[in-house]
Image 1 (cartoon, rainbow, N blue to C red):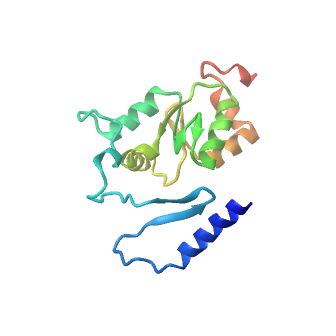
Image 2 (tube, rainbow, N blue to C red):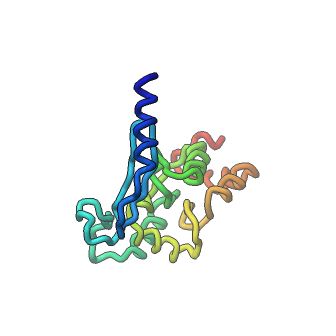
Image 3 (cartoon, rainbow, N blue to C red):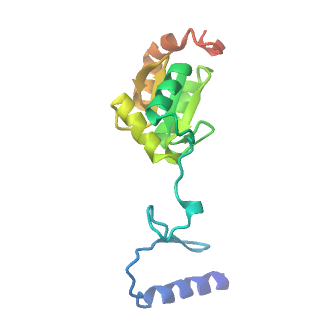
Amino acid sequence: MARLLSSNAVLKAIATLPAPLSSRNVIGSFYPSGLKYSTSVPGDPDTHEDFRPTNKIQSSDVSLKDVVEQDVKENPVMIYMKGVPDFPQCGFSSLAVRVLKHYNVPLSARNILEDPELKSAVKAFSHWPTFPQIFIKGEFIGGSDIILNMHQNGELKEKLKDIVGSPKLE
């Protein structure tokens, strides 16, 4: 208990010190284990190249538009989401994955957080601004709200019935 009080006293003392003059914004938050912060700014020349975003799709011969078209054409159920199906990084992506997994269909996915250019290419392809974006049998369906609605009214079961690997549909 005494140790906790002394840590709080130190943090309060630090908070009363005048802030140094700086042209750089630092984003930070107090956590029980101390101050955590980040000074990394996308496009900042001071950010080490190991920490800059990279394009995960390495082929220079294939455009991102072609990658999206190929994904949608070759995968019966394709989801562009924040995170991956085993570790969604947004509630809407998580909801969409849970609904689709209920039908036990093969699920292909790309994490749009890894590549801002892919995110833009998917938006341009579907003419839809938000994520996740779900395509079934080459057709753009929509996001998690639409998938959930289709699940609730039985339309999703009908749409997925002829996709291999869906024994839960019966």
